[in-house]
Image (cartoon, rainbow, N blue to C red; front, side):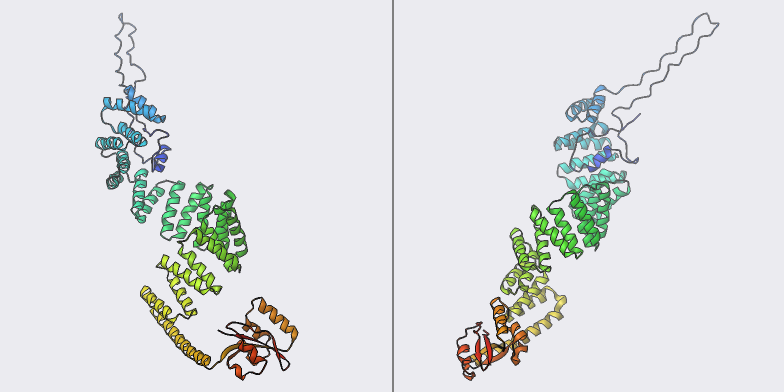
Length: 529
């Protein structure tokens, strides 16, 4: 009679997911551990020859069959204590048993496990090595020897032991998991996935296994496959809010925005915290439901305790929805929390560029480019800003740098360089013209002409509120230059009539004149720098 000698309850070691599964009962392919000592069958009855009815003397009784040898008491006691999760007492009895029985796999493996549990890695390896000598073809001995070798930092030797064990038992769950994790540690995701899928195909159906498969496939950019694996984990263990949020992110990656919202709602129903609310806001954003995204992302930031990325997402949604001032506040707060985030600096640069704050935008986009040298979009935006600032030489230098960095875009970059050179030439001519005009005593003016005091009140009010002079000229001026934003070019004040001449002579760069009445019309001037 044989039975399995299973590890004691309560003895947990690193990488014990398979060990625990084995305790719950492995597939029939599992090789059973023999009992500490095999017991012979005891006869049911002692055979007797019946007495002859006519015999005057009784027939001699048959000799009783010899009793089967019993397992030594320490072996039975060690086995029971081990199963009861009493490692210290079990170890004492099993060592006594070892002295009686000699090296046997079914005695040495529990001793190795107990030593591992006690973190006595040297002794664990000694017992495990002896188990392999006693049972060189026993996959359990090879598995636990590999575990002991790992505990001693001998990774390559552990791999060799497990590979040998897999040749004997191709379905050994512990060995498959061990080789999978070693492959992951080595960066070999392909073989790790293959080992884990062998476990899956042989009946292992555990949430941790599906999550690990999801992590591997997501790491390789196989979003849909990763989502399928994670769905398997959620079927078995639906109470983990983090898994639902991860599923939501994967659903976004594969373009299943409705599913992303559904997954995030489930996460929030389990745990209404910043992570869940932020995930739901992100899902709504991906589904182009901006108002809902704004609601949940604001709630997430208000709750607090979430990742800075939630604030970053809120800043982007605010930017898109037209809340520019609030977006700027959130961008700055995010970068205070995550000063090394290249994408954060890049998006803030775009925000500043839209606001016309070009110097600040240039500083932010240069930070982004320095933090992530592969971010060619940052280089492109830097060139755009330099061009807008009319820093022609710096823009050309940035283009030449990008040519080396992105050879595939040579044609587009050369064309862009030619446009900048042309603008530089035009600007240089304009600069000469400006210098000539200034030398001749001329000034560059914008002009608004009004014939209605009601309109004057409106225009002056709009100017006081920061409205652009040229825009108001287009809307209200009666002058022929209105279509050009009121630009009347370079004017010599001596050519103007009074009181206009006296008014424009006093103007400083970017200054707007007070209303001036002349010949029944009202005039406003602005001097261009």
